[in-house]
Length: 445
Image (spheres, rainbow, N blue to C red):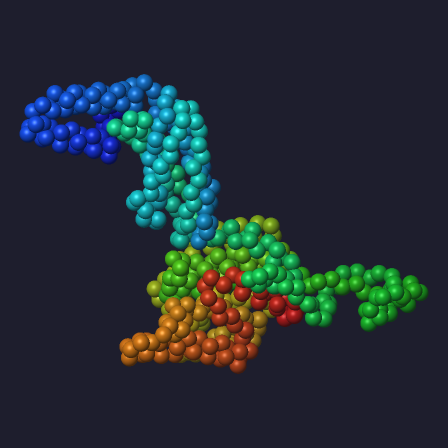
């Protein structure tokens, strides 16, 4: 009873202003006694309005109802829609301040939505949230502070709406890149058709020769048996193996745009896997740090993308340097067929690359290795900025030195026959898909 009729009672700003004005008038009436009776009348009118406001809010009708509508899974690094459905069950128009208790990961303490609702009106309030970490997000209750048209008092309504949702790698990007499943390369301004070089040698069937068929595909044995020209029919090569390898070492912990490099790599892996499956290739997943992590054999079953998403959901970075020797041993023991290996990692210096170059060269002898690492956008901004004093000249010079080392890493990998992509974190997904489609068109695997 106390909580229902007193604990949920709050005073509005309008209440304090009205009471403050009455106090000022009482002070003036001390110096001008003729005003005292008028001030007392105003005070009693204010008390009457407060009582009326209380009766309307607490006694005459039940409070509003609310419902939160949100997807079971949220997409990491993307804008996700949340809908609050508010219904005014009171017999009069109300003004509301709505607090949706967001998960602690967002660190928002001033999230308030203000709405006015007519009697019996139902309104959907839409807002978006952008998670930057994978894991479980706990939403709390919906708290509604209700004011009548008088606006002197507020009543708090706590509506139980606690729910836990999971934030997965960015599955919303899958829809954005559906068109790339065709033989195209995407640029910022559209799609560019890729020309296929040569023709595939995967046999499909033997058919009768018709004018226009390539005479080089004539099957002479079948022709001799049937007594008419027969040709071999070929189709695009399918079922090539593509493995996405994710480095979970300390260098992948660097943050860019609120997401870590590991999260960028995970989002890109999910989209790239989807494109590979649509191209009829087999997709697998390997993660490693100082110890081996996930190892998922390449397959093209319909549920493969779901398996990859579930495994990527749990990946976390470590604080130790990655063990490339262990990665090489796992690849040699588990991947027997020549495959395309897309390694998402990061090298900040040429010396860091040279420590691992021997293992990368050994991997490249048996597979087509594509090393994807990141350009430091912060250093790029420093190197392109102007310098007005000696300190800024030193900073600019050091930034240019590190940026130059990144380009040296690309040349060093190319010298040993290892493909590479140097990309900004924001362009990682597009560049990785474009490179895969280019290799697919060249039939490099």
